[in-house]
Length: 269
Image (cartoon, rainbow, N blue to C red):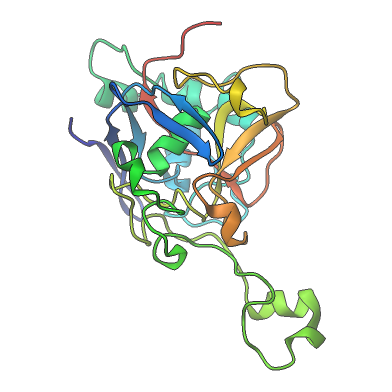
């Protein structure tokens, strides 16, 4: 199936929302997680945005910009799971907008939503190309695909220890970057490693065996919601396609954004 595209003109130029088609698993399930703890999951086909939601798209839908570092083509950040999914939140508004009508067609069987954790990981690994086994989304080389922060000990600067973390942070500042400025993964999807953490629909459960086998989100009782992908100041390990993190659903800061999926809604539970 084709990539879906919605474009609009703003004061600073043309912007686009592009969604890549992610083929489902078919007869061969996807092995979620990392060895030795992996779980077979069947994932239906879906579309996923090729970039995190940009500030331009957020403003188009919501009319204001909550980002800590404002730049139209950077990911929107400083947005909580509640603000995205709650009443009069981003998802409710975009699903009642001309954007959905333009991309989903007259039947309206599809809706914008957050990805489940398994959808997110499957897409980050390249969908049916997941057997390539890349550590990061699209590569083993993090510098090719991710905006991230190196370990404090890695830069080779004479006498860096005497500066301390505060001075060192000024020498090597981290920040969000324009989306799609690193290489994409096998499906043409950008920034699934680094730049900003991305909300998933799921609550947090550490037990891999509890992850649903049908690609839907885990919706059990949990004080936290799942984040994936790492961000611009995280170490390499946080930006891998397998690293799982969680935080309270009302949390927000300059490192947390999200990505859209266009697909049927999850079955009611």
